[in-house]
Image (tube, rainbow, N blue to C red):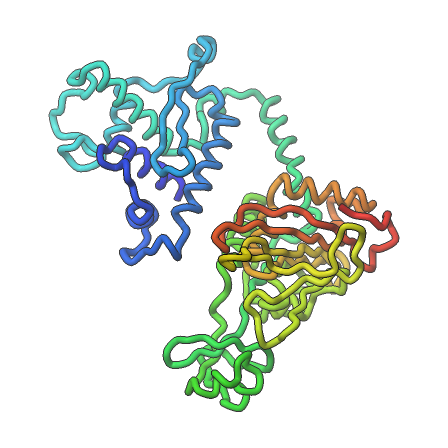
Amino acid sequence: MLQQLLQFLAAKAFDHGSESLKEYTIGVEALSRPQDFDPKTDTIVRVQIHRLRQKLKEYYDSDGSRDPILVDIPKGHYLPSFETVAVPETDLDHAPRLPLDAHVSVAASFLGDGNGAKGAPAAGAIPLPLRLPRTGRILLVTAAVAAVFAAGFWIGDLRRRAERDAATLAAENAARQADPVRTFWTGLLGNDTSPVIAYPDAVFLLDDSNDLFRFRRGASDDRGALVDPHVAQQFASNPALVARAGQLYYENAYFGAGDAKGLAILSNLFGQMGVKPIIKPSREITPDDLKQHNVIMLGSSFQNFAVAQLSNSGDFSFRNPDARLEEWRGMIVNAHPRPNEAPIYRTERDPVTEVLKTDYSLITIQPGVVPGRYIATLGGLDTTGTEGAVLFATSKPGVEELTRALAGLGEFGTKDSPALFQALLSVRLEKGYEVLGASLVSVHTLPTQRGRGPASGP
C-alpha cells in the first residue's frame, strides 16, 4: 500500500494543477477507497501518509543515507518534495548506476508519455532526453529517480546489499537479535509459534432500523437470533429505550477502531518474527487455547468478555461506577497508590469542547493456566487506549522504558520467562481518536511476584 501511495504522489508531484491535491482524491485513486469515501470518518489517508513519512525517514537513516536525492513529504502537505544532496565523490564512484535510457524507461512506465497508454511509450517515439532542453532533462531524470524510488525504496540498493561481506551481515543479524521489542515478545511467547490474539466482541441488540443497544450482561444467543423481550429489558443498558425498540436481534460483529489497529500492529509484528497467530473473538477462547497457547487479549473488561473472566488480580483494575451508563465514565483504580500516584485514573476531556484528550490503558502480563503459558492483556478505558498500549509494547522506546522500570523493581524477564507485571500508560489523543503517543505512568508487579524487588516504581 505504501509503495502504491508513493508512486501516486510522486507522479502527482510533476502534474501541474495538483498543488491542491485533496485527501478524498488520494483515498479513492491511490488507496482504492469507494466513491462515497469520507475523509472525516475514515482516516486512512492521514494514517498512511504518516506511515510513509516514517518509512522514508527509516530509509534515509539506513540504506538511503548516501542517496543523492532526498524525497520528503513535508508535514501539512501531501505532495513529496525532491532535493538534491551533495554526495562525496568517493561514494558516487562506487554507487551503482542505471543507464540514462533505463531511467527514462522506468519514468515512462510510471508517469506515462502524455500520448500513449501509461507504461507504454508511443511507437517510434524519439528518446525524450534528445528532444528536451537541459532543464527538461533535469526534470525528467528527477522524475525517473522518484519513480524508481517509489517502486521499492525500502528494499534499498540490491547491488550494494549483494556486495556486503559476511561480517556486515553477521553484525546486522546480531543487531536484529538484540532488538528489544523482539526480545520482549520472545520472552512471552517462548516456543509458542501460534499464540492466540483475542479481540473484543461485545454483544449488542440490533433493531429493525439497524440501531444498536448495549447488552451489558446476561446469556446471549448466536448472532442474528431473536432476543426475548423480557431478557432485553432486564439486561440491556437502557431498558426503557429497548422497550420501545420493537423486535431485537443479537449482534456481536462490532468492535472499536483502536482494537482493529492494535490487532493489525500485533499481527504484523508476529509475522516479522515468523509467528502465525490465531485470531478469534474473545468469547471463543477455549480451555485448550489456554493450555496449548499463550493468549493476548485486546481491550478492557468493559469491552472484552475474556478480560473480565481471565484477568488476574493486580493493583490496577478497570471499574465502571455506573454499569448502565458509559460515555467514557470508566476508570482505572489503583488499589495501592505509591508516592506521586493517583488512586483513580479517568479519561480526560477538553474542558470547553469535551473532545477526548487523554486515555489510560493497562498492559498486564500474568501466568496462564498451565506452566510455561502466559496471558497478556493490552486494553484502555476507550479503544484508543488499547491502540496506545499496543503501540507502546511494540515500539523500541516503549519496550526499553518498560524494561528499565522493571529492572528498577528487580524484575528481569528471560528468554523463556517474562516478567509478570501491570504497566499503567497515559495515551495522548488528537481529535479524540488519533493516538499521538503513550507514556509510562507506573509499573506494579503482580501479587505473586511482590516482595522480589523494592516497593517503588516510576
